[in-house]
Length: 91
Image 1 (cartoon, one colour):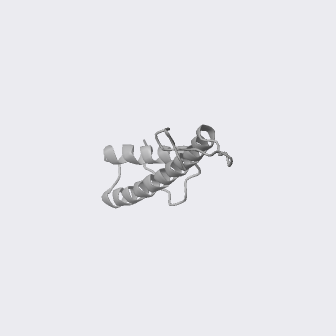
Image 2: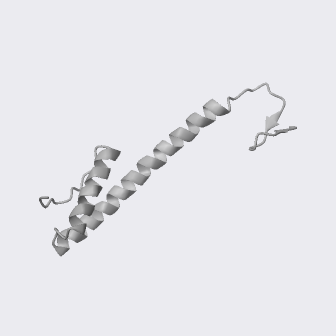
Image 3: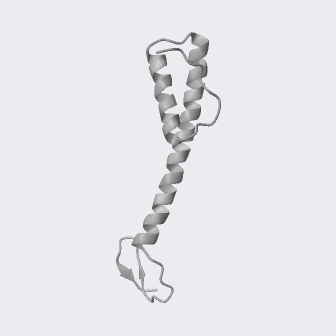
């Protein structure tokens, strides 16, 4: 595998970030990078991990919102409220 200088730009997508991270890990594990390039690759890997974690957090929030809308439709004229475990409680 040819040596690549890690990018410093924002990844195009989650998948692109994961691929770049996999490439960096492969190069580092194979010992293909000199010390200074390894440090740069490590820093880039940290940035990519933060980016991916942020993307996953966004998606998780979106899924929770969607699930809440689908599983618990809001009805303004209900007299009874449900607790978190689904049991009815008096208001």
